[in-house]
Length: 412
Length: 106
Image: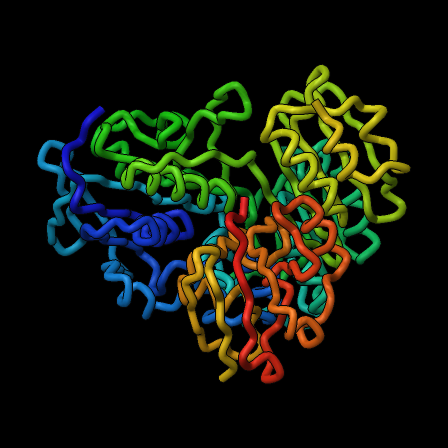
C-alpha cells in the first residue's frame, strides 16, 4: 500500500496516544510537519493519575503533563489546544477545525479517545454530579473532596474503585452503586473481584450491588440518588464511572469503517489507507490473541498505537507488547497482563490473605492473562510468557517454592 | 536546580535541569531524553525506565526497593547498579548525578 511521500501528519486528539505519536515521530527522525489538535486547554497529560495521585492532591498539573508545553515548541510540533476538528475531507485530504480553518495532510491519525457516558437519569445535570475523564473534571471534584462529605460513586469498575479508595483516604463517606452483582464484572474474575470487594468493605466503603439508580435527587445541588427499588441514598457528590463511548463522530462523518470503535488493521490503518486510528477510539487485531479485534482502553494501548503508527510512517517495524494494565487502590498495586476473556481455568500463586498473590488465567493449556496484586515479578514474568507464546503448567506456576524468574526461564 | 546527566547507550549525553521532588525518570521524559520510555508514567508498572547509576552515586541514590527488585528481575541486561529511574527522587544531594541507559527498554 503506497501513500506517496509523507510530509504532513495531522493527529486529532491530544491525549496520551496523540501526544506519544507526535513525540515518537520526532524521536524517529521524522522531519515533516506535525500538527497535534486537541480540545482540552493543556498539552497532553497522563490520565491514569487522575483517579489516583492527582485526585488526592499529591500530583500537580505540571507533573501530570507528559511533557511541558515548551518541548512541543522545541521539537516543532504544532500543538493546537482548545481546538476541535469538525470535518474530514478524505478526497482532498484536509481537516477542517472549528472556525473554518482547513489543514491539509498526507497522513492523518485519529486519537480521539472516548467520551464518558452520562447517567441517563433525571437530575444528571444537577450541580455536584460529575463525570470522570479530564483533569478539569477532577479539579471540580477535588474542590468538593472534604472529609465527612457523602459521596456516591456509580459504577464499580477500576475508575470507580480507585476514586472510592482515594475518597476514603480523604475521609469521605463513600457508597458505590453497581448494577452488576459484583464489582469489576467486566474486567476480572469473580474471585479477584471478591478480594477487592472485601478490601474496600474493610476500608469502610458501602456497596449497593445489583442496585439500579433511577433518579438523581436535588433542587440545584444534588442531595441523593434514588434507586429503582425505592431506596434513597443521600449524597453531596455523585461521580459517574460507567465507562466511555469511543469518540467515532469524525470517523463516521467521513465514512470510515466503525464498529465498536474505528476498525483498523494490525498497522492501525483504517479503511482509508491514509488515515490511522489509535488509542481508546480504535479497535485492532491483537497479535498475541489470534488477531482477535479488541478496543482496549489503557495506557499500553495508547502508547502501543503511537509506536505502531510512528513505526509505519518512518518505516521501522515495531514488535508489539502483550496488553498490560494497572490499578492502584489503597496500598494494593494490581498489575494485569494479557486478556482474561474466555478463560476456563484460574490458578493462584500465593494467597489472598497475604494481600500479595497472582491469579493466572488459562484457556486450555495456554496462559492468557494474569492479575497480580503486590506481586510485580509474577506480573512481568507472565507478561513475558504471553508475549512470547509460552506457558507453564498450572501446578508448576502455583509452586511458590520456586521463584517466578526460574519458572519463566524453564517455560516452553 | 540539580543537574542530571543521562548518557544514551550510543554515548550521547543529555544534561537536564531536574527539579527536586520529581523523579529521575520524570526529568528525562519531560526533556524528551531518548531511551527512557516510562510508559506507565512512574507507577512502577512497566519497567521501561531502567538506568545504570554511575557507581560514584550509588550511595546517594539508595537501594532498589522490593517492588523495583522484582521488576528488574525481568528486565534485560541488569547489573548491580541497575535502577528503575521512576523510583529515584531528585534532591539537591543528587546534583551532578550521572546515569547510563541500557541498549533497549524492552
